[in-house]
Amino acid sequence: MEFEWIQIVIALIASVLIGFSKAGFPSAGIFVIVLMASIFPTKESTGIVLPMLITADIIAVIYYRKTVIWKHLISLIPWVLIGIVLGFTTMVGNAAGAIMAIYLFSKGSNKQDFIGTNAWFFLSVNLIKVPFSVGLGLITPQSLWFNSWMVPTIVVGAFLGIRILPLIPQKYFQLIILMFAALGGIRLIFW
Image (cartoon, rainbow, N blue to C red):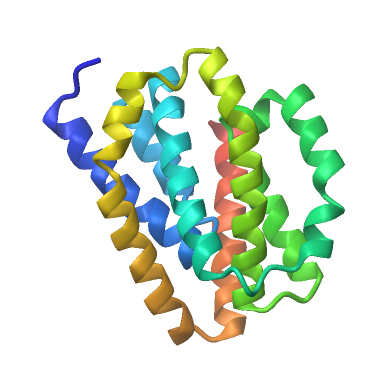
């Protein structure tokens, strides 16, 4: 697999957005899917994005490790497994972001609890997707090599998210996340 310079530039921008969304503003990553799908075929895009998401998930899990609410996660496990096995949408559409946002806000999660719990949830879901993605030929040695070049910009994005999050009041944080979730839902309907 050979990459053109425009693909590399857009992937770098996408990687910053991934880090930012995972460590600061979950659901903002909907723009990443659109960006990557605009420059890569679906199969390649999916295989490139998943390891980038996992990298950012790991950063968020490490940073927000004390803010996870385990009881919220444990209750979701059976539904996630059913969704991955039966629901192709969770494999390629990353449709769970909007649902997870609504779920965590309905539980009264503050910003840090929201991000810590969200990070663990998506790290788990994304790791479960890896064997399927490898088996389908979506993740390849070439895509992983490409991913390795994205790690520094994912870290930069995560750092920005971590720094900006405390500046946003809780009510605006919720509004922003729910707006991104609504955009993600609209994208799934029309795309």
